[in-house]
Amino acid sequence: MEPVVDLLALLRARALKPGALRSVADGEALMAHLFRQFEEERREGPQLPRISRLGACAKQLGYYASGAQRDGKETDLRALLTWATGDAIEIITLAALADALVGTAYSLLAWAPGTQTRLTLRVGALEVPGHPDGVLVESSTGRWVALVSIKSRSSYGFADDEKRFAEHGAPWGSEESLWWQTQGYLNSNEAVAHKVEQEIVLCICKDSGAQAQYAFGRYGFVPAAVEQHLLEAARPDARRVLVDGRELRPAPDICERCLGAGEVEYKRGLSKCLTCGGTGRGKPKDIGKIGFPCTYCPFFRPCWGPKLIEEIGTDYRGRPARVLRLLDYNPDAVTHG
Image (cartoon, rainbow, N blue to C red):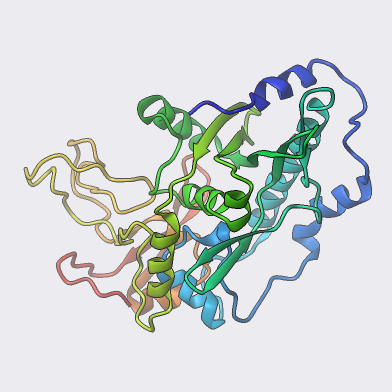
């Protein structure tokens, strides 16, 4: 899908013309937003779902809703600096984009911190709140044209997005939490009422500054799928399942492909056959390894229980990273914890 307005081209043109950003009206508010990761206290207690969190597994959403004590991924200095870097990229890009639109037929509505447009996704009797990074409007009429989001990506994620776009026409699909966030905004009461059919996503690689632009249309089945997901999250024995029904499980010792049962595509972030790594080659290793969605979950210890093993490995950069594994994992006798 092509974006209704080429925002990336406008941004690139603006970068070649240095000058004061006419869009920045309240510099103090922008600076406060950049430091908020270090100044705002983390919310505790029961938390209802937000659109940005819909892609999480049902069990994690259940932990949040119950107000369970967090015992998993910590909010350490590395996390704070990573989030603050993402905030900086988002604010700078939005400010530059708002300025780049001056003199065109369009303008960017409600992009500054504290002014963003509130959206609500109706899911059964529940209204799930959220907000896009901005709304592209027609300057002369105020008509909503598209929702706008800025995503800061690691070099690994950025390259993977480009590869998947080249192969499948989209940087991510329903296996990615970002897809559900985008669909949550597009299916919101306000987006539907304003007849907005597209969200334009600008991805910025925070390691290199490379940029990419993607456009997403609305899928009408999303509210019903989210409703079933939230019903699962409300169960006392909620499973580790994503919105599309796939389960987060430790890595098995062998996959169907290696068993000769045909091709199996293992989605990133979920269990992958570590016999072959999804390539059809290699030796068995790392049976019971748990994927990265769980590694970044603030509830992974109570979720997986006493058989959870925590180790130190390396990430794609070669930097130290936590590795989770399930002791004595038997893929034929999985419990949901």
